[in-house]
Amino acid sequence: MAFLSNKRVWIGIVVVVLIPVLGAAWWLVSPLFIDRTVEEEFPFASGATVPDDMTMKEIEGAMSTMAKVDSEMTEPMGEPMAEAAALKSGRFRDADSFHKGSGAATVYRLPEGEVVLRLEDLKVTNGPDLRVIVTPNEQPGNSADVRQEGYIELGKLKGNIGNQNYPFPDGADPAVFNSVVIFCKPFQVIFTVAELR
Image 1 (cartoon, rainbow, N blue to C red):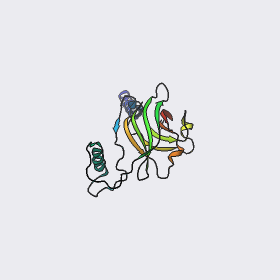
Image 2: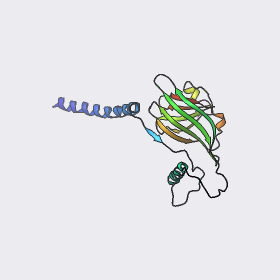
Image 3: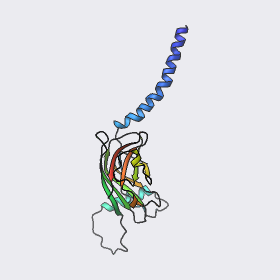
């Protein structure tokens, strides 16, 4: 009887220990096998006034649809709409033989003055807790280079494939940032870098 009781205790201990270990292993390893695709539109309506009965997503959809219309306007136009200005851009490169990345990164100033980082055709090796960081360092090669004084974390990477937008915080000067880094926060590893020029 004591043997069965000890066996149950050991099984209970193994289960209690094994469940968190398996959960942590899945969190760390599963992103390597699972891609997440994000397809965000360019923020056309960043400065638009949104009517009370419409969401910003509905406005973005309407403006995106209108941008694709290919017909000539016959009525006179008022003031021309201001356009977003590309300030800096670069192409992603592989960090090493395992951490690979491609696609474009462009910093835009929108008509209302907001600054947005736009990632297009992004394809990067997936990993746990990837972050989008802009840093003054042109060629960061390690964690210390990425976290050079003045760096900003723009947010968690929304998807390792696709097109996505990351707004800069108010008051951030895009001129001081010389690269965009996709960075694994738990392991302090660079996945891909785009030098901004």
